[in-house]
Amino acid sequence: MKFGILKSLGLISVTVGVVSSAQCPDYTTYAQTPHGSPSTGPLGLPYMRPEPTCRTFNSTAVERVIDDMNARLKDPDLARLFENTFPNTLDTTVKYFNATENLAFIITGVSAQWLRDTANQFAHYYSLLSIDRELASLVKAIINNEARYVSQYPYCGAFQPPPESGLSPSHNDWADGVIVNPPVDNRTVFECKYELDSLCGFLKLSRSYYLATNDSSMMNDNWHTALTQIFRVITEQSQSSFDADFNFISYYNWNGGSGSLSPPVPNGGNGEPKAYTGMVGTHHRPSDDLSTFAFLTPANAMLSVELAYLARILDASGQAANFSELAREWSTRIGEAVWNTTLLNGIFAYETNGLGARYVMDDANVPSLLSLPYLGFLDKQNPEYLATRRLLLSRQNPYYAAGKNFSGIGGPHIDAWHPWPMSQVSAIFGTDDDSEIMESLHLIANNTNGLGLIHESQSIYNSSDYTRPWFAWANSYFAEMLLDLADRKPHLIFKDNQRYIPG
Ligand SMILES: *[C@@H]1O[C@H](CO)[C@@H](O)[C@H](O)[C@H]1NC(C)=O
Ligand SMILES: *[C@@H]1O[C@H](CO)[C@@H](O)[C@H](O)[C@H]1NC(C)=O
Ligand SMILES: *[C@@H]1O[C@H](CO)[C@@H](O)[C@H](O)[C@H]1NC(C)=O
Ligand SMILES: *[C@@H]1O[C@H](CO)[C@@H](O)[C@H](O)[C@H]1NC(C)=O
Ligand SMILES: *[C@@H]1O[C@H](CO)[C@@H](O)[C@H](O)[C@H]1NC(C)=O
Ligand SMILES: *[C@@H]1O[C@H](CO)[C@@H](O)[C@H](O)[C@H]1NC(C)=O
Ligand SMILES: *[C@@H]1O[C@H](CO)[C@@H](O)[C@H](O)[C@H]1NC(C)=O
Ligand SMILES: *[C@@H]1O[C@H](CO)[C@@H](O)[C@H](O)[C@H]1NC(C)=O
Ligand SMILES: *[C@@H]1O[C@H](CO)[C@@H](O)[C@H](O)[C@H]1NC(C)=O
Image (tube, rainbow, N blue to C red):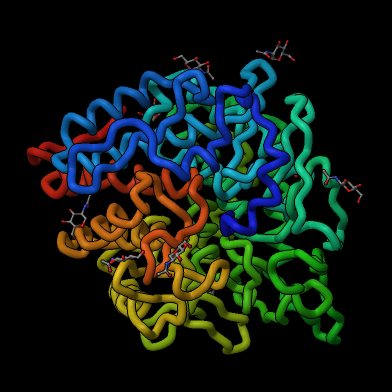
């Protein structure tokens, strides 16, 4: 999820944190002015980690990775960016954690937990879970908390703190006047836009934890109930809008009111009509913006990948053979439908409706078409990916823009001339071309408005015009990418050509 900074001002006053003493400034404010002594490179980037006493979780394994990378990175500005971004999730977003209760609450900058953001905010720590037990127990507690959310409200993507935390629910201005059916309780749910990739986020978090630890204890009753609900949504949202007699089939609808940020979902909150393809529909995109057509290609690609992993971890732990069979079937069906129905002339469409309509574009958020290799759906060298990538990074993608200061892919969430640094990170994950990698890396590093953190969007014309000073997911995604380069392309960023893999 993401909100433009101006749009999120209304929420700042309700932020309630574990660490919110007078000495600990609100991090959204803190992130807007430079702190500490500047890095010694030409960019002179500030040190943006909060004071140790204000950090929301400490990990010696994380500090070791920072030291290791600092010793190796040849560009002091890049080293400072890593130092600021790698720990940002632990430094700033762990609002509640109790290992005994097996509950943790992770915010994304706004005081709610987004399923999508959380899975990605931790993606660069998974390799440390086998060496840092406390960090592993934090991730396990996040999974349990999310399993409770998903088992109750599988159509929702953003949630309130667990009651055990004693943290008050936050008021969501954008949920005012929104009526959803089936209804939700706003003490548990922060926002209930139906976004398919939220469920993928929960699955990614679960399998990443299991594969890093071999600990199947997170597959508890909450988790199994959540799986049942996920398969329910998959079944419901893969169907045609009309049955043979033109009865309209609806399982969930969202009627936007004033202040709901995105326009109303058409057709009584059910979305554009769709026909069966084998893919699963969605109402909103990973940006929380309204979908044009229901079948979002990158979310289905991610779901196909994550269901294959789900089958694998269920089999490896000897659990729920019936679910693993179902997961494998759906993974194959969805993956084939992506290949069979979203390509035309070797180009993937971003959205389709199963009736021949297709929207050729890309949005900045992950899952996106540009991030298909990162998601694990296809190889970087795949010819359809290469052709689609060329199109997406050109004028043929309505949400690509290039200016004197910055370039990349944006989306309607902010506007077409504010691309997101995150899209440049996805571009790096999707290529082995050294010069393309370095061009993207330079663009990102030179466009933090001198603040040394990764922002949501950046104007192509004006370096000081950006959104979201504090965006934990973007910081994590950038650090994850640098660790990927440390393994895959050490000569590009290190003093020597020695690969580095943490953990
Ligand atoms: C992290 O460590 C600092 C001391 O370096 C301490 O003041 C702070 O309370 C710790 N944070 C947590 C969440 O334990
Ligand atoms: C964690 O939860 C348990 C059970 O509710 C409680 O007894 C304990 O005090 C909590 N721990 C902390 C550090 O709050
Ligand atoms: C939940 O909805 C009720 C009824 O509309 C409202 O009074 C209350 O303030 C809402 N709670 C939050 C946390 O927004
Ligand atoms: C988990 O188990 C697999 C198969 O036994 C093994 O290959 C892998 O190294 C184990 N991973 C960890 C983190 O223990
Ligand atoms: C799998 O089996 C369990 C226990 O027998 C049952 O509760 C669950 O509904 C089954 N799930 C599916 C998808 O068949
Ligand atoms: C995709 O196309 C192949 C080859 O035509 C076909 O065998 C398969 O059933 C199709 N899959 C789906 C989900 O439509
Ligand atoms: C900033 O941009 C300049 C010019 O492209 C480049 O030489 C420099 O390496 C960039 N800085 C970083 C940290 O990438
Ligand atoms: C970036 O934008 C600023 C205005 O904020 C301008 O002064 C500067 O020259 C621009 N940089 C480039 C490389 O165009
Ligand atoms: C650049 O953006 C900043 C922040 O939005 C604004 O204050 C400034 O006026 C803009 N500069 C130009 C030249 O548009």
